[in-house]
Length: 181
Image 1 (cartoon, rainbow, N blue to C red):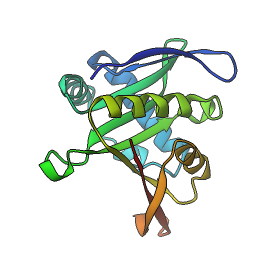
Image 2: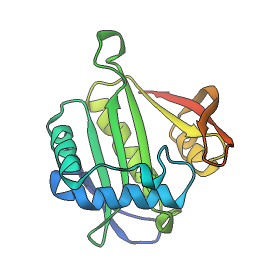
Image 3: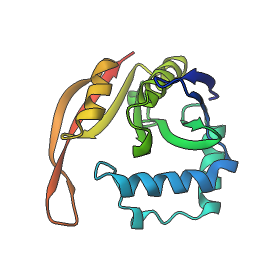
């Protein structure tokens, strides 16, 4: 699946929302590590991200060729500042109508409207790809993200009480959210 759109953010800055490609591998890895350092809301700790540049290149190349997966980036002044992904919950017939969604935005760019731009893109692409439902998981105290998802029609349908066990021994709960297209 392909996507490319230039948008104007809340602060007037130009932003390009586009597919990731294998040439982005190093910058994508840096982004994943940075966002894992900046917030406790990500799945991985920064030191658990062990993928090499070559492995990320292969991963991005495979997704680029996929008919039902997509990774997009928000690019400002030539720099990747956000990533979002869409992938099937399963390739099995009973689940082909469902897609999973995830997003990360560098903290410096929070509040610029990038999340809204990425959500619009993902939902547009999901519809064109034939998905009927988009699903996500979000840490229950991540109010910024929950507000964004609700703004785009996502509803909470469950809670996983002990979803993440942090290194300090504390647990984080996740809301399970979905939106029909």
